[in-house]
Length: 631
Ligand code: COA
Ligand code: AMP
Image (cartoon, rainbow, N blue to C red; front, side, top):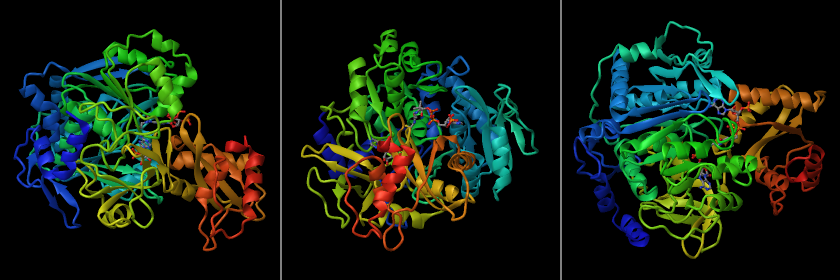
């Protein structure tokens, strides 16, 4: 097969192309309407088809005779556990949990929040919800109660499924008190909280709404999959936007299942029965698509890894997992490789493990710097594939399609557009730019199956954020350029979203919290370059006149505020006091200018700046705190 023809077919004949791909799935009702439009004139895929994604992920393989194949391997260096589950075992657990959820009063059309560490029960909970048509919303365990409360109030879950604790390198994180605190903070009150007790010594306060996970599973009957419309919302996944309020990305069922089967086969090039490992977390889109649903739909063995690339116990962990479980294809974030490279620059740990099973390494979540790619290739000479996508798309949009044709790699580029994505580079006026000109990365509608359906409870924000800027095109929020060979280079976000160690965070949300400190008159939070995490947030604060607070005290208090409200994952460590913030004449803070100054990049002084003298003042401030390129 050749990429060019395969890709062209998907763009020229999308209905035929995706109808063929949908036939790889077992539908309860085959779709006859392939592509239609919703009330927004936004494309819908397979509207009259019916299916169940839990059935495709588990039951179908058992019916085909693969019940004894290992479906999941739980590898947890932090608890020194390795546990394997066959498809039969996963079915038994998931279908009983689904029965248990029904007995608690949950039914098709309800929502449930899952707030769990990286343990198999998190995947079981997702699959159990999908089995009975309950729309799940997984909240990353690193988020604080306040963040959880925001999501509770937005998606109004009937139940929350959680665990007693998670483990972060050197400490046990008690989840249950955080859930209780979030429920106390939220206006909406879920009826039940299902708690999986890991018995790791964490405090598990009991509340009237609590239900024990084990008792629920073992006391319930196995329940069958319900038949759901293709457009049924499988999940809501909150992601950071440009305001303090996260956006609830809504995912459909049939388009998503089609796209995931397609991705496993044609992008990741992984065969049924092989071992696939995405070292991420179920709280992110990577976890949804490529720890849980994608590999299971493709009848792979997926790995649920509870650990980090380093310190659990050291920088050999990834290689140990690959060798021990004979991983065929792996996915991680470049930041993980950078962390390993820092600890083991000469790749000594790599030499000690048999990595012969590994065919391909995929990297995504942030821009992959060339040094990291080259280090990887030098030590592990297999294709290392940078690929680009977002929570919104749910699956890769730019990649080398390893199951179609392995194209030469151009370091710094995530490759060419994936089938179904007609990617263009526009200027501010919506004119298409020539090769090598940098602009906005947009995608011509219709997007292929599996991408976002809407924003939960906020269709206006969906339209204004993604569709209205360039009518007829989806606006990705990223900047980039295409070269003369159609390779696309992503240069970074064009908005105030930052990417910290592969985690997407909103600076606007951090600003709201920083501004709430009593000594702060005004502030800006910007993402600055960081060798390990790609970007880290930096808070710039102008203190109220007459405030005598010391810098170290302000920094400590602001950092604690952000940790308490968003979570440690925000990684805000630096707060500096500056004399004034550069602004436009209309009062808008010039964040991009601040970023360029601190990162030592070339910049043009914006013609709209209120007072040019402020640039030197800001440089003095950065110099004083030895921040960024002023170190
Ligand atoms: N629950 C509770 N706390 C969490 C958490 C969770 N699930 N995940 C992270 N945190 C905390 C960490 O303990 C840390 O707290 P600290 O400031 O008290 O030390 C903070 O959030 C930042 O965590 P993290 O971003 O993981 O940084 P780190 O310094 O501990 O580790 C890396 C650095 C590079 C090893 C790590 O970021 C990493 O593995 N990155 C890869 C990320 C990834 O795979 N992303 C997937 C997107 S595809
Ligand atoms: P998330 O929605 O959390 O997956 O974050 C998506 C954002 O991460 C994108 O909009 C990009 O800004 C960034 N991103 C993801 N993958 C890449 C990549 N391969 N290269 C550059 N940026 C990336």
